[in-house]
Amino acid sequence: VADYLKAAGFTVERVAVADDIADKDLSAGYPPLSYDGRTCVAARVTGHAGGRSMHLSGHVDVVPAEREDRWTTGPWAGAIRDGRIYGRGAGDMKGGLAAYLIAAAAFLEVVGQPAGDLLFSSVIEEECTGNGMKAVLAAGYEADATLIGEPSGLQLQHAGVGVVWARLTARSSGAHPAFSSGSSVTRSMLAAVHALEDLEAVLNAHGTDRFFHEAFEQPYRLNVGAIHGGAWPSSEPVEMIARVRLGFGRDLSPATAQRLIASRLAEVAPDVDVDFEGFRADAYVDDLDHPLAAAVIEAHETIHGTVPSRRVLAGTTDARSVKGPCLCYGPSAGSIHGVDEWVDLASAHAVARCVALVLGRWQAPVGTVENG
Ligand SMILES: [Zn+2]
Image (cartoon, rainbow, N blue to C red):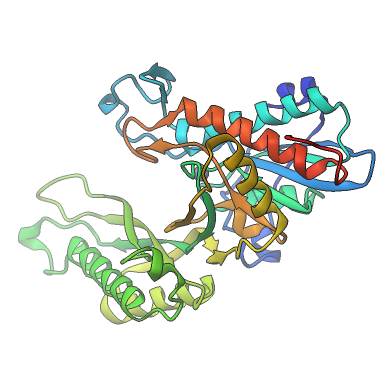
């Protein structure tokens, strides 16, 4: 990515995430123990005429593939079939990132130096903390408008729910069931999960932020993403760990969501410890009432002849961390986070065209551009 941006004319730097980011910013995620030298790539072309600035962004991190043997061609093959690229991260979101890189390079090739600053970032950690984008923004990559190439299916994605992660841990001394005291790590963990399912039902039934209910019947999902523990059918697990994710609306802060989780568990499964890790993400809604939305709608209409529909996500994106206008607009993708994830190539091509058009309209001094 850095090489591509350099060749396109960008000044490129590496942006590291501060290890203490979660102490200073209460909406930052809890970072891993070490970033191990992993950095974001951030790049800039300085505008020459005081035009409006634009930040194009995407994330390069991907979720694990779990059972690689269940993929038709393997998660890392990047196989092309029937107009799609299949692979982990093809849809979420290397396809959109690639489209944005091509759009930026094409735009610079045509205009030379833009009127306003053009910023580009390829960030880490979108899938677990959002700290990559936060670090890039703190390093001076705020712009008049930001576009993120998340796989929105050529729709204007402008909202996402809040998300927190929790790690539940239950422990025992690991007795043979014939000699155990009757307590069960597994039963405690199941009770804890059921308590969180009850909390999920309460949030979906009684949450006061009705915006997300207009898009989804059940916008706030609990996901038990991993359960580990135990070694033998005739031994009680010495330790069982469940890693969960819970969504919520703008009526809760991440800290309040964490408190609700902790108090439910204290009531129903007091022998299950809870720690918080990864996301502490606020729900967000962009009202689309700004020139960026108008520019994307106009460019999309030029290419497709129709106005793009609006899209709300029952998940989160890095858009929540951007202060000014920020939208997600990217290709069509499927099986996101799942087996045989894919991105549609024609839609990625259309995204590149659309974003290049947006850049043309956005950056040029008013009245100097006809038809992009
Ligand atoms: Zn993504």
